[in-house]
Length: 106
Image (cartoon, rainbow, N blue to C red):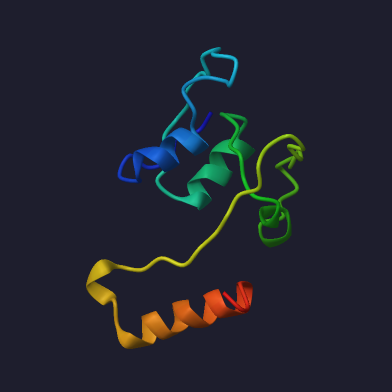
């Protein structure tokens, strides 16, 4: 399993590069990728595997990578993110518009 960058939150690292299966079997840890492009390169080179969302098939089609659906896994959820030091009125307005568009009436 390719490991995500060490600087990412531990929860994300555990989700994307788990140390063990739900049954408790250890998952061999592979190389650490510093970017998504590097992750795809490692997979294409046959060095490891990495779970991705369904959208990756459409946005990152590659003839050297096989995308296999995981039907029993929970969907990957996405959300906006930004630097804490860049929380401007424009950012807050965008986030509010995105929330309104995806959760009308809440």
